[in-house]
Amino acid sequence: MERFGASADHMVSHVRAARSQVANALATPLSDLDEVGLTTAITEAAALESQLQALKLQLAAEAERRQAAEDTGDTGTDAWLARLTGDRRELLNGGLLLAEALQAHHRPTLTALSEGRIRLDQARAIVNGLAPTVDEATPQQIAAAEDLLIAKATGEGTRSGVPMPPARLRQAARRAYARIDHDLHLRHQAMSVNGHERRGHGETWLSMGPRGDGTYSGRFSIPERHGELLRSVLEKLSAPRRLVRDRAGNSIVDDSAPDWGVTDRLGHALCELIEHLPTDRLGPSAITMLVKMDLDDLIAKLSEAGVATTGSGVDISAAEARRLACQAQLVPAVLGGRSEPLDLGRARRLHTDKQRQALALTHDSCAIAGCDRPFDWCEIHHPTPWSHGGGTDLDNALPLCGHHHRTVHQGKHELLRHSDTEWTLKYLRPPRRRPQPSGRYTYIPTRESGLPEAS
Figure 1 (cartoon, rainbow, N blue to C red):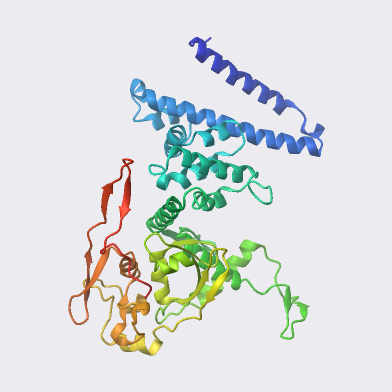
Figure 2: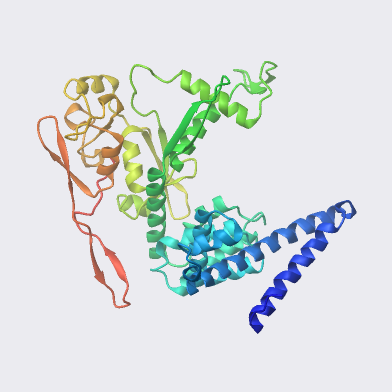
């Protein structure tokens, strides 16, 4: 029999006793459970799983602290754990990072996980959601934000009483400081949204190919805002539906509507979308954006800290809203202090197809010098913003590819004329930072760091 220290022997005996109890539970005939017993057993099993995961995370963190891999010659703690457990190294590495963050900054979340009140994915969503400002917020502010998110994760803090899933919990984490500290909330929300946009853009990929059986399959990862846009388009194309209305508004049944599931309908809608894609050229965006913003953000002219929300509920940065607004028909919904609609604007006029054709006579590609993206792939940018009196005419039109258009609206580069038909981007120096009495740093905006207004 293995011999451990007194404390270790005590822990190991507890773990083995727990395994023995689980084995006894597995030997119990499930047919003996009534509905209440089945529900309770599933709930308790989920809580037990959370407790075991909390124990594994703490053990892994201790192995990392001791550098246990050095004694065995493994390349790292993740490799050491993989050899013992058979799990993949990348998963274990992510678990190590989570374990370190829980112990260093998020004790309330670790406690909730150890007690089986929340699940591992929920704990990860809380930790990752608060990560952008974890070095800026005080321990008291972090703990207060955690309490709010833990309550949502357990259902105690939701209107329905239903636990909030990780996806929605990540969105709630962006606003976790709203009632705690207003300035911290604005910085945290902006940093969260900008970080998600960078990750979405950096982790965009698509893989597809024929299967040899008459079908084509693939997988992809795209930014959240584009995923919501694609899903919105596909859902609109998911007709015919069995229950519809005629022009008089009367309900009728379409017997020809196929009996498809949700995934089948979306798949056929994708085929319809592909069949109607233009083959001669790619035109301008057909997006109509409903962008909601607070009155303070509007008055601040969508500063770098501004965050907008699309009609589908996706948070986007002010820079991304400005980029999309150049090609989309922008419908601003300005909200007051109680979220009352103060103004609902009309779609604004964009450059017409005739203007694009005229612009194509002088530009056959992106206007940035050295960029060979074809003109048909470009979006039309207003060098002089609409809000500064810039008109929608050829003198205020510049074809930019998606990358350079995005770069212009991020506000870190200055657009300079290079020749009659070419422009360049000059990098602006980063904003100054100066130490505060608390020893922390705060953002000090400079004139160069200000973002251009919506084109």
